[in-house]
Image 1 (cartoon, rainbow, N blue to C red):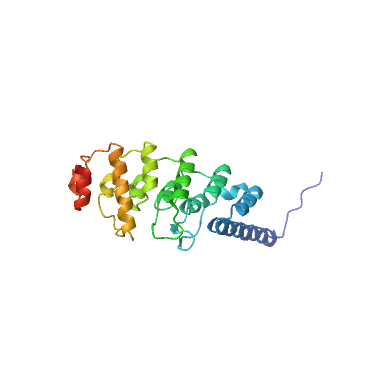
Image 2: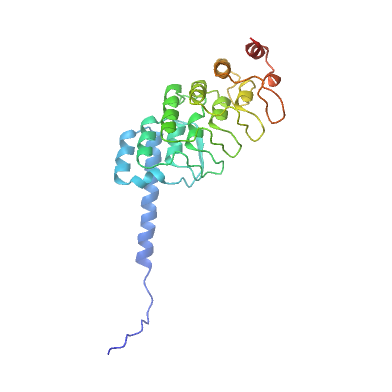
Length: 252
């Protein structure tokens, strides 16, 4: 019987390392192309890429970046392509990503924000803001199972964030979808409390923002949300009003 001959040399890992490195580079290039296609709202390109590699829908962003041109939003480490598509109201691409297996409730970024949190964020002064497409994006995510009352690290629900950014049409949609208006964020405020205050976000003092604020307050009142609703400090919505015109609305 032949005895096995001991292997006296070393394995050559150079080829394996080279292959692994090439795979990482290829994956990075694919991810970059997907992100660029989402930013450009190129649904055809996204569809073609997902047809080739469906797993791209579930990749994780590895580098934080502030998008300011075609999309206005921070994208953080741990976010997914769906977060970016939702932030840019890329309705067709949101549907493609969801169909490919993207998780509508993914919240692996450090702020624990889901794609729905990003979709409800608005900026009235940005050229990329489109209230009609924003509503369609939110509706699409809700239909896919996005949690309407999910809270981020600050305790903010999608309703809190929609109110804070004066996304009036989205507020109406969330209220119609029976979101929980009693939830308080970490500082203790309900979304209705934020609605009657200046949120401090850029542009909230503009005339356009004040019009949206009026629409949001009207939506809460029409939905039957009480002005006696208390925050974490025991103050009612009415107690937090500082503007005369808002007080008139609540007491009418």
